Image (cartoon, rainbow, N blue to C red):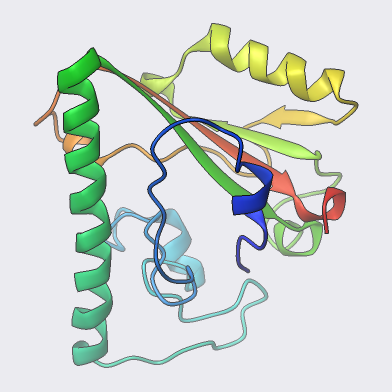
Amino acid sequence: MSDVGVDELFKDVEGELIKAKYSRLFCDVERFRDDAREPMARYGEGVIYTKTYDGIEFHRHDEQYRKRVMAYYDEYHNGLDRAAKRILDESGELLILDCHSFSDKMASHFYKPPFPDVCIGVEKNYCDNELIEKIIAHIREKGYTCMVNYPYSGSMVPNSVLSGSIKGKVTSIMIEVNKRIYL
């Protein structure tokens, strides 16, 4: 359930790295803070995971634990917001590559196989179709299969951008690499 080896896959990509300092099993910074807004929370996979992908109870927590996890969540998102603001102030545009991995086994609990080698996730209002087509073409030139928004969809957009408190041209693309092609 973790993004094993993803750092190594994307080590040559230029840009500013913003990375959670902990496993998503402790605090999933990719989720909405409010479980009511987070679709995966109904499966026990909100900011705090309470179940594994196959429905087995993973963790029980009390309010003190929740506050500790949410402090980490807020620290990550505050840093992401500061970086987004700084980059947008400097250049007027921001490209986010939201890099992850997935397994066929995990995906098959929620979606129907077959699954691609690479999943590209996009957000409707933060998408650059020309860039996405270039990424897809590059992936296919390397001999890999690729799908957009399947099995996973969407991409990380800083809270400050979503709320409208900072503005500029923001493109966010999630790249999920299937573990079967590199592990």
